[in-house]
Each structure stands twice: as C-alpha cells, then as structure tokens.
Length: 317
Image (cartoon, rainbow, N blue to C red; front, top):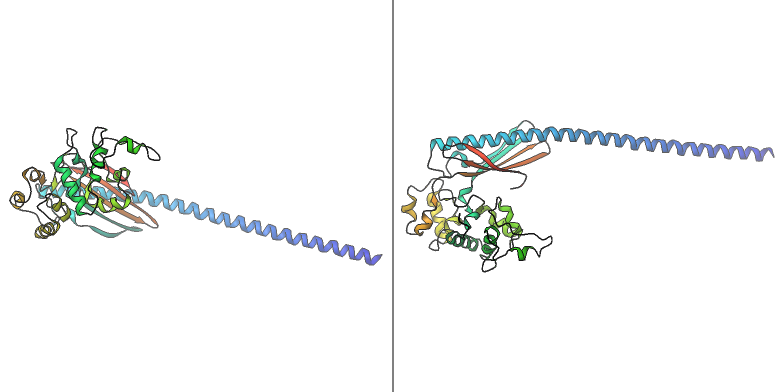
C-alpha cells in the first residue's frame, strides 16, 4: 500500500513537473513572440519615420531641381532669345550627383522637338489636314498602323462622329469594361493615348518619345527635332535623308530654316517650324536611402524668359 501511494505521489509530481515545464516553455514562447513583435514594430516605426523624413527631403530637392531648371531656361532666353538648340546648357543631361544621403539626376527636354498630338485639331475644332498627314507619316516611319490617327482625332475633336477609317467615339468606348466615353477635348498627357482604341502599351512605348501634349497650334522646333520628326514633315524626306539632315545640324542650329527646307517642305508646313521653344519637360529623380521619387514638370517659358510649371506629376509622366 505504501509503495502504491509512493508511486502515485511520484506520478503526480512528474505530471506537475511536466505541466510546469510546458507552462514555462509556453511563457518563454509567448515572451519571445512578444519581444520579436516589439522589435519588428520598432523597426517599422523607425523605417516609417526615416521614410517620412526622406520623403520631405526628396520633395525639397525636387522643388530645388524645378527652380534650377527655371533659372537655366531663363538665362538661356536672355542669352539667345530667338534660338533653342541641342548645344545649349539646358540640353545637357545632369548625371547622378551626390547629395546628403543620396543623389539627384535630371534632364530638360524640349517638348517642341516632338509632334504635338493636339495639333491634329485646329483652334476652330476642325481636323488639321497637315498635322494629320504628318502624324500618319510618323506612325508609318515607326512601323505603327497609321490608321490609329483616326482614333486619336476622334478622342480630341469636339464632335461624336467617327473619323474614317478606324475612328472611335462613344459607341466603341461604351462597350468596354468598364465603359467610358471619349472626352472630345485636347489631351493633357500623352499617357491618355492608352485609353484610345487600337493603342496598346507596346505601341505607346514606341510612340511616346516622339509625341507631346501641348496647346493646339504650338510650332515645331526644327533645331531640336529628331530625324523621325524631320522625316514626318514631308513625303519628300525619307528617313535616311532625315538622318543626314539631322547629322548636318548636329548639336547646333539651322542658320536659315526657310532656305534649308523650302525645296523639301510645302510652304504651309514650313510656316509651322520655329527655331525657339516655349515648352519644356523637366525629369528629375532624387534618391535618399532606399526612397526614390521622380518629378515630371511641364515648364512654360514666356517671351520675357519667366518660367512656370503648367503641370506636375510624381513617379509617372
């Protein structure tokens, strides 16, 4: 009987010891999890605080970059009022430069070196036949279906009548998921082309470096235009000839635009060319720590040289 009681007591003690060990292990596990969570939360809070500080510093640097671009363009206007060309200071890309905790880089692009999509519709709301032909030539040179020009025209013209061929108005877009309508106004960003019928992401990637969204009637700066844009000005200029003309100009400018192009371009198109620009795009990127942001700022420079931002976006054009 005594042995039985001893065994029972020993079993109870072992059970109690087992429970105590399990309890201790559970407490240790809970404590470890809590400690890990506290450390993780502390790291998150620290990272959030760092990110907030970095974001504020990045925004300040991007604002400084915009002011820097404005000063350069203002000084350029003072120095060469009637000329903008690729050999000027503003056209030099700013390579990554060290700043406190990171670096900054940027470039200024002459948007009048590109085809202005809004020129497809004139100030009276009618299709501009010269711009239409130029755009179709540009699309053909880039090996893109030229008929998508009709969809672009329908997107920005004031009526709701599909252009021929391949036009697209509300009847096309209302069938999409989700449905939407053509705005029938000028576009403010070339990214809007992605919403137009027949224009895929791949098409836009090829086309976007050659187009801009500026006020209708904005002239083309021939001194900064690429060979593709030069070739789009006339059926008389093929891409090889355009490349030769571009190389002839180099980073300088055409001394006499009329004299150089009057035999190649019809008079009405020739009158649309200019040697100076008003609209520029600033692309500035700031990286601090693991945080990065890019500013895209559409800059307008008036006749006196004063520069103001018309449109800004962060992270995307």
